[in-house]
Length: 372
Ligand code: GDP
Ligand code: MN
Image (cartoon, rainbow, N blue to C red; front, side, top):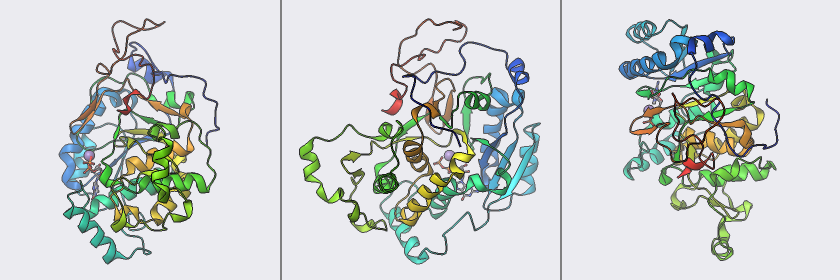
């Protein structure tokens, strides 16, 4: 996949400033080899239509990208007909079979189910819901190899019940390609600590055991380094030979997200919006990362989300210049949202900057400012 490029800019600028006619923009380039990906249940049709309505009116009525719907059950006629009426683009429906969904045959299933039930007892968000664990593992290690996605190079992830606030007047795939970007996000927030007590230790072990050298993104996920005396106080976390091959759920402390003096700041890209290259996930490096995370049992013993999994892989494997912050894309899911007019920062005059379309957050001093 993409060669590493030196970090040559401090800021990750929006691709396009100012207004442009999306109809003209759509005709200016051939479409990228890309599709929307929506995993959903039949029961979520209304939420899916809500998302499509927003996406079509804000973007896709000009750009006409196809949709791939995936489900671990078969989509019914009502769902398929409903969805087809909501777009003039090509739509495909795929079944996710047991090779990509559910417990692998190496798992002790009664034990895994018990660990999941215990997370429910501890009121960990979605922790007691087995299907949610399967969904997270599917999005972590499989969706990109689904037969319907193999022909695509790029995807844009969409969920039921999302909104786009602003018109998206350019083709994000084309611009990502042009700028050698691999992964794009619009919201970065902190993960619920109790869902991933051991995640960072295993991610960090992958990075160390494979001599993956930081290309500038890893630091995005770190607390500032601890004081030396703090370091001394947690010697049991440092030696790599003490990381058990399985997540030791019963011994996991709430605050285990430390390894070799590095502490996970819990930041993750909110993966229900994602525009990225599929071949990043298909790469040997990513797959090795996934296999090692999976072998630890953390998808069952804890409730590892695909968002922190994707994020720490991006941290380990990509350079800062390969990651794009879509600060110009207004997005909402549940009660979490990113509005281009909200973010702090001063507005600077710049060439081509149109007063018609004022991004009040135009230039925060650091592009990763949203981490808090
Ligand atoms: P949240 O956004 O973290 O609250 O999680 P969601 O319930 O929205 O699930 C994330 C995505 O996975 C959504 O696109 C859901 O439609 C989908 N999803 C979650 N669980 C299942 C499942 O068991 N089957 C299917 N087909 N889709 C699921
Ligand atoms: Mn959701």
